[in-house]
Image (tube, each protein chain N blue to C red):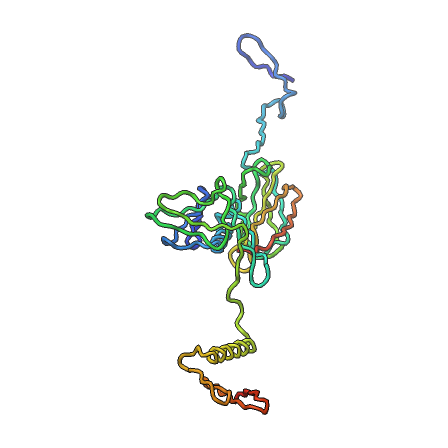
Length: 190
Length: 139
């Protein structure tokens, strides 16, 4: 009996997850464990023991979490279809287990690249949108950074001009200089 | 009183009617019921408690009543949990004792849970199974 979830065919007799992705496509560990859980829940899948365990995603703070490890149980393996010579890739976490600790079944002419790590992490990207206050802070910081960039003469379209009174002009910035009795120059933005 | 019938040869022997069941000295047939292997020993309810609504469930038993026995689904006792507490009525017992196994899976939609299974020995008085499914933060 078999169940197909997305591009993965679960053959419960052979205990193989047959990958039917396009050549060169990357199989993510997250997609793999999601599909495994769906297959386990299917009418056919529930008659068999679970396929895999998964661990990880413990928060380390700052949007970083422990990486995901999928452990294929009971001699289950991943197998890519034979479709000429090509390289496949598994990414986004660790993949362990399988027959004699080999989670990938042999397929002629197919090389599977699996990146393993003893301390893999997951970095969360995206998240919630900025608030209005955060947007204002970001815009202010950008504007100030632009003025510093122009002041040091790095803006080729707005050359910086040092004035004889001790002031300077660059872009929309006008700074005047005034000299006191001690010869000290005070610069004031206009 | 015995009935005399001819046997092989010349010997006439009375039949011992004390070993037969009947009336008036007539022979009667004795019927016996024999249990077929497919017949259940008994039927009893299985009460399931604290299952997560939306989970797929399947009830079966482990052949030989050992944890390593092959899982054999019980026909008609699978589906989707619609109430956290529910009763599976008239569950047959094909072994004595029979080790039930309830499987719960929820990995498709909404909050997902790790595959769950629990065992209980079936009883003619019925059996109650309390489930403690664990959320799956990975899938």
